[in-house]
View 1 (spheres, protein in one colour):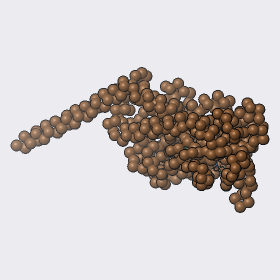
View 2: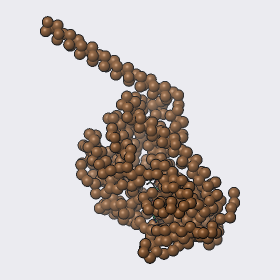
View 3: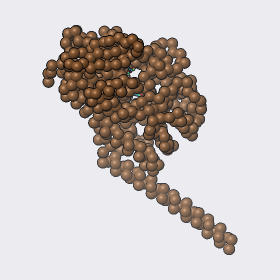
Length: 468
Ligand SMILES: Cc1cc2nc3c(=O)[nH]c(=O)nc-3n(C[C@H](O)[C@H](O)[C@H](O)COP(=O)(O)OP(=O)(O)OC[C@H]3O[C@@H](n4cnc5c(N)ncnc54)[C@H](O)[C@@H]3O)c2cc1C
């Protein structure tokens, strides 16, 4: 499909946001520019300095780099340097109702999962080298020809005629500079006023719905981190009306705590988490030096495009609760493919970019939401938790036990599409094993209750007869 609006020699692309989505788009754009041999410039605008420590330099994220993303990066020739990787995590440990399940990388034929800091480390940290993940990506594309303007964009003005460029106002708010672009790529995430501005442009964009999360980095010292958490990401599903999931991620001397609630997080979340019996002995009760309340995408944006303008990354769609950075990679790749291969008008974006993103992310998220709801239901009923975890914990690498571990592994690492996980969950032998295991546990509980009742009534009878 060809249409009138397209990129040609002399075209200018403005990318708003230098987080993963913006840098990945610049990377793919550079590849297309070289492949097509056209003279198109790419400019990223971002007022954030990733060399700063604490929330000022950070894009507020837990910093787990999924194995699947790592593989995609390698295919693109992007190798994350060792000094930017804080930990190599060896697996996940799930904690539900005092039951634990360890899911290891080795069992799943994966080497390890990397953890990073998005900015240059927590507030007041002292690392001898630059460690920021976002800085690495931004520098990568800058070194390959993308211009970076370290300023925020304040306004976007759509042209009256579609053949004219879009105008951006950037720099100082009181005396902004103007930049005219043939294509504007909105990679500004969901923690910005720009979402509302974009919606107010009136072309039909409705931003992604979000949930506020609580996140903190706590310094414990490396030995303490290893002693209490090992090289494992811990996922807690506590019995709590407020907290739905809590994760503790080891990162060198630090741990990153991420608390996801049923509703927007409040400052009480941390207190409640630190007061959990299993956490009390591992993390001291003090106020973290570095914490934030970022927003996570929970449902996709609507119509994230119009002529010459498209949104990518969190500003468009992201995978349900997992691997947002990988979603940024996928949307950036699809967006560049459309812009260079098809066109930069509404119909190209709708028929190519949106259609593919819908299939890969939006539709798959329905399966994800369903799987996480089932997981919530199972973890809220002790008998079901016990039957699932006891089956998964069986020391066998075959059959239903292995399948159940595979489901949980992929749900928590996000390594394969939710649809594929759903298919594994439908396996009839697995469901039969879960049913039998649950019945057997139920039977044991009844037997125990009857024995206890018998015992206490015998005691009562003997006490009564001795009294007589
Ligand atoms: C608590 C939490 C934990 C998470 N953990 C993980 C995880 O472990 N692994 C994972 O893969 N994903 C995780 N995610 C999701 C991940 O953070 C996002 O999906 C990812 O950062 C999206 O990338 P992005 O580039 O679209 O947006 P962002 O990373 O938010 O980047 C947007 C950029 O746009 C810039 N910007 C904003 N407004 C303007 C403006 N007006 N002008 C110029 N620039 C602007 C910002 O400064 C920022 O640099 C987590 C999210 C949350 C909230």
